[in-house]
Image (cartoon, rainbow, N blue to C red; front, side):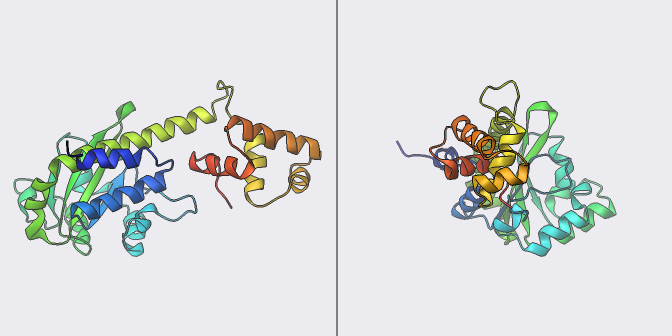
Length: 257
């Protein structure tokens, strides 16, 4: 039996341990499916956009022009985006054009601010399919699949409908699972959760500090610093300190400075 697009995506997605790597996989899959760009928002009510561990916007790493991403945030375009607002009212995929006079917007009275957002999008693409994903706790996220040639939008949407729908849900569900694992890792009720001091020591080790230097920074003895670092390695089921740093970074427990 032939493996479907969404099955291949989910197999690869299972190996991704961070939001950044999962987002890059999403962008790669979009290109392979014939879309020009992909974007996502984990919570449609958020005006900020996801960032990498180094502080850069993940959207830039996915292929979006830096000025596009920064302006979207600076101008708070998410507040007025008509597609974002539609995502809160439907579970169906939304096929839409950046042209305010396009088919998707006929019969809808767009506010001037909404029209401005659509016209802004036209600098980067002409049409898209947005898949709303309703998450636990009443939140709604979405994944958007963009195309530069408006004439190809409907055919592309039909050809990839099943894949984009299933991939969108799998992607955001995976991010929710990563968040749950991260919360569990710092939950005091979890015997394997890292303490604040263990995270602090590990973060300094990630910066290349020796045990002696960590001890000086936290104003504790060398033995105490070693104790915290060894505990972190054990709790993360890591083979060594470098492995522990990698695991902690992938879970969002620390960021290398």
